[in-house]
Image 1: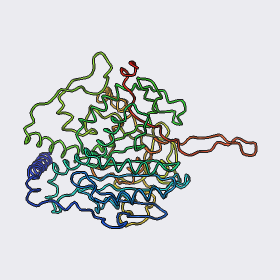
Image 2 (image 1 turned 180 degrees about the horizontal axis):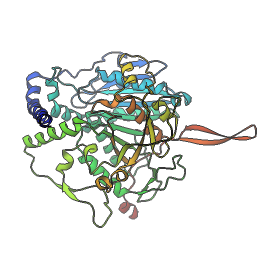
Image 3 (image 1 turned 120 degrees about the vertical axis):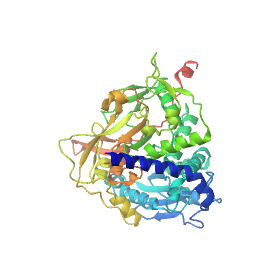
Image 4 (image 1 turned 135 degrees about the vertical axis):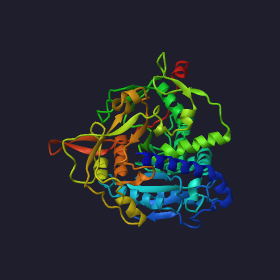
Length: 498
């Protein structure tokens, strides 16, 4: 026990030393050139065949397009314009990755597995991926490149605050929506999760009260390396805009999910159709340990000593709202590591029997969830699809040697003492077991792909329809129900003045 405790202290001390040396390392060793990796012609089109299409779009250190002539974006838009029924998947990578890193291959594996699923084939969808690249790995020197926490975080924040990233998302989404049937799915990881989180949240506020559909259908943020100041603000606003009702939306195919009712009136949102979902691995050392240590050191070195006191989300409409605490709590922790913000958890679940005919990814995508239950089928850390993508091969089905059932549960039902007052709003912040996402980089495991497939299907459940065939009524599955256009509703106090 003493040896283990000593080793833990030593590892944390080493981490602190590395973070302290990071700024000096950047100055001494310099940064890589931000010029485009795919200059000229259609070099940024990384795949264009009947299985799936993939383009890369690069951004510089200040968030501007790396290609000053706009050819990368133009080529990606042309892909979408020429693709019928596009299923657009935009992915923003995180720390230590770039336009040419292994993460490109892992994303290829996900696109390949998605394109060969029964649901995509049955509905004649065509998968189009766009890889948003930035210099997430500014130093190529081993070990030293781990010392760029603050530098890369600042770059991610600049990309999120400046306009070209959102401009690319909007133009790509518009190109996809030219077609009658399309779907825009955004994914961000680590510092890429920070970029996506801030981009979509500021967009929601800009569109508040307008009848304009945001440029995405579902935003999925994986292990975001971002402080939770903005998320706390948005969650507080959401609970003032919505009240939770456990009754399902009348026309929803998923009868187990409740609904979020706008306080100012209008159509409710089904609980299973939030516009933003954050997935946080419970054993993520990068966001659970490195991030708070790095942020604390930044606060210390920057001389930031004064902190506002802010309201904790949960029960904001009660006469006696929850605690007022220091905003430092939210600045030093990421959303999925804040006990004040986590509102959903993935928990093991018992079922009578497991599916037999396919892997969990295909099954979750093909079938509506019953009571929020989904499946994984692979051993922990299995990456069959991602490894195939790194070799530019078609992704195989995941192993089916370890079927497990899980349930997405409101966190207060799992632990009422810890999470009982957390806001139940159309923004899921979900804690995920390490069996599904192992540590910070385990987002491309076969099991997490199965979870992403389940969330996609919850967001677009399949509606059954009665048809008559030779005088007999037949129940058959139809195409997925599209998610309703989602913008923040007008505040109740403003609606009353009209």
